[in-house]
Image (tube, rainbow, N blue to C red; front, side):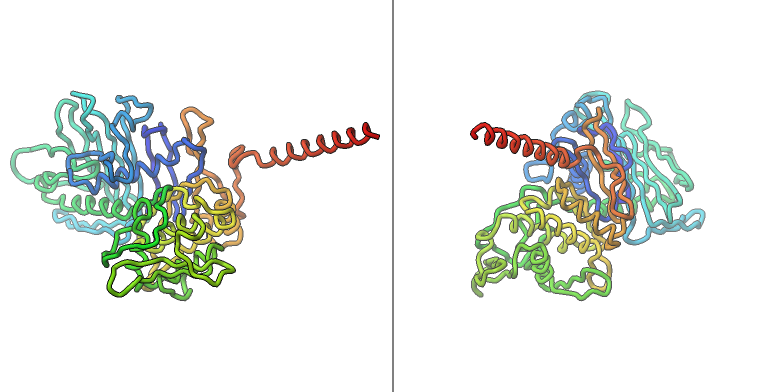
Length: 467
């Protein structure tokens, strides 16, 4: 689970400041305020980790990628190629990392890792990316156990020196060679292990980093329209897809799974959980996925809405149901330890359903499977006041601790833009509520009252004049 995130010189952000992440992390702001860029950056790192090109420092994306960010000049702050993009984050480890120094015999362990890197353009041309530095820190209960990183030795050559603290690397006998460039933006090259007697643990650092980004999944704001028939060959998809295109396949693949919505709460079959959440949101009464025949690998989604006795196909009900269904399925389908990035999960929902969606998200972070917490983290970009208000209420009611919710506001009133944390207290109040955060509601009410009084006075005057 991500604990902190910090990005500099990426798109509209000169400096996001240190972002404190929580099981539910919310980002608010006006259109084009830069709040989407944070998720885009994380997804670009994920694309890079999963790219087959080990030499590509960043993979900005292609036709079928979650994000397509273009060239370095297009993604760097103010499109100034002389700027370097630097970033860092801290994350908790699902399983503790531990190893023993084969030279000294000292044991090292940690439950948390931090990572920092700086990327810029090369000195010879304006097209080649170079990794200026990277650094890992291993921590246990917040205390530093060791740090190790790589830094470019010279601007003229692609040679790096290794920097270590609280650990002593022992060189193997022979000529002193400097290791070559790191793998992608995060990986120690094989030479680091080959040149030292006690550097095998860096391979575990590489692996832990890759696991972090493989745990990320993304659901965009534009989701596919409902269909009358869905094909499924029995393959288990990794996720519902960037646009929810694998939603029904995920439902069918998860039919045998049982989910609990909290400690000592009853377990339900996966499909029952989805149906109950849709009902809690006031969208349907019943929901089911059926094969159209035993001979064909095609399925239909049937829905019974409130007040109706008839079952209808998914395309025949409100558009909002088909748009929120991928959100619900992804939240409960994702493997244990997943980080789910979502843009506008509330899109096309009426206000009451938007509020109820916040309760669903609380159930998601509390959910359990096979007797263990699922440890799901939700990173949500939203425009919904109703969603936030419900979370505030649940904090006040002690349904969810305030420490499990973090919220940030992209403030474009300042130049450059700033990402400001919303200070939520134990009563659910936001102490530093930005002016006109969700529009000037009180101003609208006041102006409506003034206009009504003026209109009544005019009607009175017209009535008196007609006598």
